[in-house]
Image (cartoon, rainbow, N blue to C red; front, top):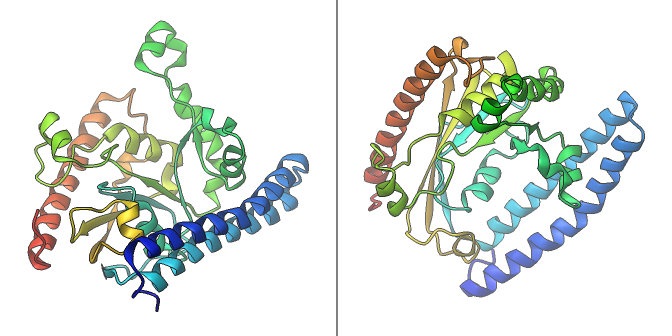
Length: 302
């Protein structure tokens, strides 16, 4: 449509439209949040939550539409069938750029429940956005460091118990929890520093994944593993919005999470911790090989 425009103009227009889109929906989120806070009746909270989720979904839809009309970027998407808005997903993706987030939102929007992140409990106090996260039912977690537990052994396991209680609402409401298991964006310098045994990935952080699965209980039985491969070297959000990324390969893999890994305390069960790390490393090895194969298939150099 408007793909012929100069790169910088496209990037600027998309950023302006995303900001206007955000300004439009933010007041609705704030009003809905205060309704839930000030009138905590079950039917009011239920209606408000539905409106808020619909608003956030529309925000993602419009941002994705802006990308569609301005960009010529080819999205090669595979194995996306069989997803449902009525299921629970632990969503994982290899992390190369902040572009990963809008791309993941674009391809998964309205296919699964809205993507949510586990957030530190302290973030609820961030002005405006904190109450919006709360209103959208983002799960907040309370985690104690090993040092805190050593000083006060009574804290052991309390972070998991507190987060489980906060997640009780998701027992009957499908949810998708999004996590970058690498914990940070991939760079060759980071790869070399941690001496990663994988060619295309950093080491996965098992603790974060285990905490999510321990908190969410048996509802979350599926890991939706997303593998992103970019055709270009410069893949930041500005490069994406300017249309400088020619192709993005998006591969989905639904992995059944072994039942023995659900509802467990990663920090208090050494056997579970060891077994979970082995399972995750094996999954990561398969993902690493897949990235190599996808690069070869699409003629993408490392």
